[in-house]
Image (cartoon, rainbow, N blue to C red):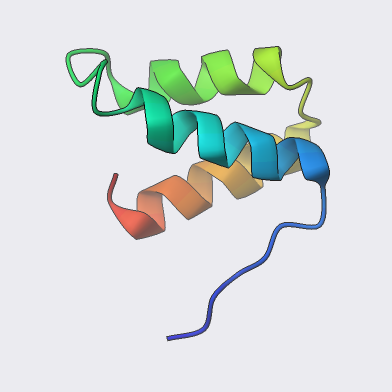
Length: 60
């Protein structure tokens, strides 16, 4: 399986934050956490879509 590396430092930070937050906030829908990450790390719409696909593909 090929590992996808995000181009943006903000995406890397958002992904790391999401992976760290998910276990502690499992009661919150993943879509809400993604939305929070997008705002927190000021992701562009394209970066937000990338994060959404990444998380969906990884089944977090």
